Amino acid sequence: MALVVMCGQPCSGKSAAAACLAAALRTSSTDLIVRIIDESSLHLGRNDSYKDMVVEKNLRGVLRSEVDRSVSRDSIIIVDSLNNIKGYRYELWCLARASGLFCDTEVDLCREWNSNRQEKGEPAYDSNIFEDLVRRFENPDRRNRWDSPLFELFPSRDEIVESAPVIAEAVSYLTKKVDSKTRDVKVLQPTIATQTVRTSEANSLYEMDKATQEVVNAIVEAQSCGLGLAMNKISIGPNLPTINLQRSVGLPELRSLRRTFIKLAGQYSLSGPPPPTDADSAKRMFVDYLNREVGA
Image (tube, rainbow, N blue to C red; front, top):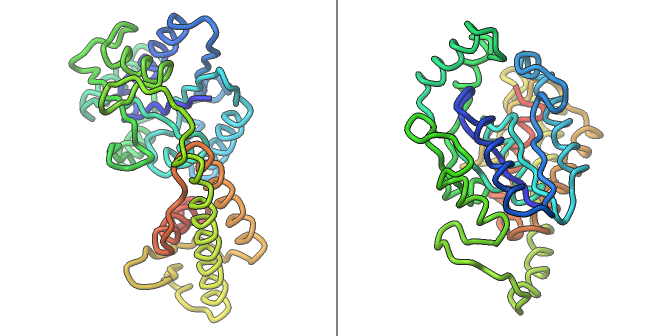
């Protein structure tokens, strides 16, 4: 399975680009199963899906389940939902080493397009939800593993059509394993390097297991001693991010969150490089995950 994450500000042209990419992929090969997963495919409204963090967290779980259920060797899944949020882009990348298609549109133009849709009675974001999504958006950076390969489309400058060069480039990459940096066609063959990856992967998962347990221990100790609870912040060491809890989290829930995180990391390692081998990087990733799941 190949996974494509549509990314961009709200009303930046993502849905139109996703439709064009899906059409171009189906044209390129009749054997491909192409599916777009978004709010409408799940019979959900845009505003209802983002009205608060609880609903948004539920949407994230539903989308993740849909991606899991759509796994097929000859399928390409295009996810056009929740992709403004960096943490969710990383989750999808962990699941299936997702590629990214970024609709780079200026915020003012996105705001204008959203207002035009409201005036025409078309599906649009409420102003407060639109501004909240804009505030939380973080541009993808191809230097990050979870944002690479990244294909960039400029809807304000270029027409969003099936024949657009960026769409064609993405189709070539997804169907022929074209390297997104060198533009060379790669035929992936097993080598000694790929055969020995599992040893490195096992070491990485061991380090992640140990690092995440240390984070859990720090949270349990801080909560039992009443440390940092006034500000709902727990420090796990110098040069590491702070854990921001919105409530007390019991050990059973922490263990469940830890198992889910390690499972995600393991699923990612099956389709890409192994997880980080150093403890600090693993802790940063785990803390980022905890802050998204139970953070303030």
